[in-house]
Length: 160
Image (tube, rainbow, N blue to C red; front, side):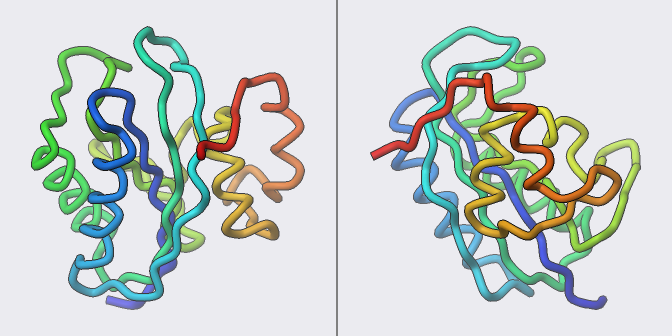
């Protein structure tokens, strides 16, 4: 398998979100076939299409030889280890890990869509992505700098 630069969204709004996200990032760094890990600053945002406490969010990036599906499987194992449950769509969560981008690939399978289908609509994804890669071009969407104005009205603040 060739290497791809993957971007993974991290989010949580239940329990000690910062501790869980920090632990999840450490676990991402231990995934086989990955290197060059980076993490954006933390951001706080209100839930979208849901209720509950504010979310803490970040984006991690790393080079990987894992296939997109193998990466998704690994992320879901990390989520489960941190008590992730999926009682209903957009439910509050102890940990949410999403494959946002996988190189320049567009992927559409029954279990995985890349680029993530709503990343261009979410300030809590775009701003951390821009912090890591200000010149990033989202496949099928264009430069991240051109997408940021469309989420300017969404409340997002740096987390301490």
